[in-house]
Image (tube, rainbow, N blue to C red; front, side, top):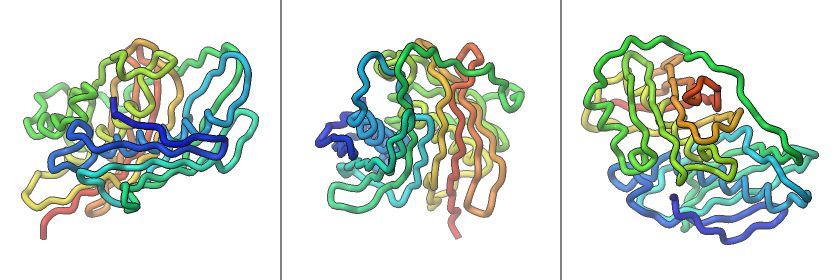
Length: 271
């Protein structure tokens, strides 16, 4: 879906390339933060897998991904690189970075990747939505915010948006799935990013001249949800002037908790 190309991979890490396309951007050609996080995660996954020589079936997944955003990529090709820090019996620790093709730093992060042999069937405990949302009409501005090309391509729909809380739904599609049949970690990470941003946006009134960006995302992935869509519940925990601290829980449609994360989002109002 993203159009990523593999340039190099070995037991020490990987290098991948992502040409710019309007489909991965926000208005103005700014590449969506979920795409950047996906590029980090995929570079880390490839680097981890390139050094795994176990025979037989493997259960593999990223269990933790941290992304810190350093600058924006605007209408430009990006490069994702990963470096293995340590290989353990089950866990691989990696550092990853995304740069523009000309070398400008875009994002940096760390990942923990898990690979085990055998037929383990991972499941998540039943989750409880973190808040009870009184149903209300979603404001037009919220619908506009999720109508950008990349978010629309993932099929995200916003269902609730009020006073620091938001709820988004993303249906399952085969083209968004990983090898295990569940929604790909990149798609889930993009959902965490977007849901956290919506919790922040619900607390401000849009004005001309605002500057916005995701500062960082921490995402943990607990369980597969083969063939099932997911619902993201987000809540703003604190606001420090332009910095919004938000928590996101992602549940499968049957209530199984699939992932959770924290998103620091920045909204700078005009003077």
